[in-house]
Length: 443
Image (tube, rainbow, N blue to C red; front, side, top):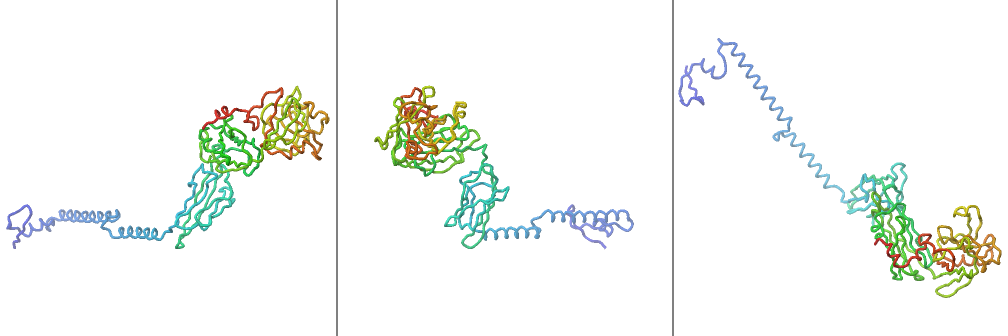
């Protein structure tokens, strides 16, 4: 029988073929050719395996046509979307960044929007010691109750809830700026103090300041009297502020310290942020005349009292100039060896002592001198002595002046054979003219 076969290479649609020829065209072999048949079967088998392997590789590779892989992606995406939709509206922000190594010791705090804080825990990371703090009345912020320590690692955990009661948590670990990379200024007077009209604001920094302009610009001193107040640098670590003339009596002075984060020198930043206020008392200025060995006390511009004194001897005269009482001691020890006088004196119970210079000048009670020296002769090693009793008891000039004096009161010494006290020897910047004072400003 003949069959008609049309092939792509044969456009003639009617060529006769025998059954044997048809088998050959189909890739099969006649029984008379067994070897060719086995080769054909092997060829078909390899072709089938290759096709199966290709299908398997396509499935493992995540072919877009593979329904299982596509379903997994859509399922996870759906779960993420659902979780996001149900997330709390409360957004917690901690002032210090997680992992920070130079965090502020002043402005550490927590804030929340879209909800309220429920609890905040701040601890020293190494010891677990808790740092007390308080959540604000409206529940939107938290602050520690005390300034943090420098160079210390802390951990903070803050929790909040939104209006639907959904919770939010923030965990932050940070380290505050180290002592080596920060500076602070110790200052006088203290907040709330009542001081005399000569009291300057004086800062002593624990690091040398090279960026004086910025540091000075971030300390502002103002007075309710409206007096102009100017800063003056003594070297690289001391900055004092004062007006042209003494403070007005009964005025209020405010200093705003905004040094947190201010660069003081290469690799050194400030860590202080606070406002301090103090008041000026009545005006008291006392003038010591070494020629007459008398002191005249003026209160609010009027003579209040005259007191006999015994100032420095001719060998050890008292400094001239305007000096400010910087410290008061009901009783103190005065050892000459601490101020360059060797073993010339060591009095362990000097009564009613008030410091006038850092180098050891005091105005103080004197119980060991003969009463005749007061008002007549200078006998001290540079101090101003007032008659007093051992132990400080009784009604004496020494006790009276001590009780009537404030830190910040002015004591002026004149007609001494010594030089004028240096303006940075104690709180004695009044010995500079206003022009010279302003010349030392970095503003």
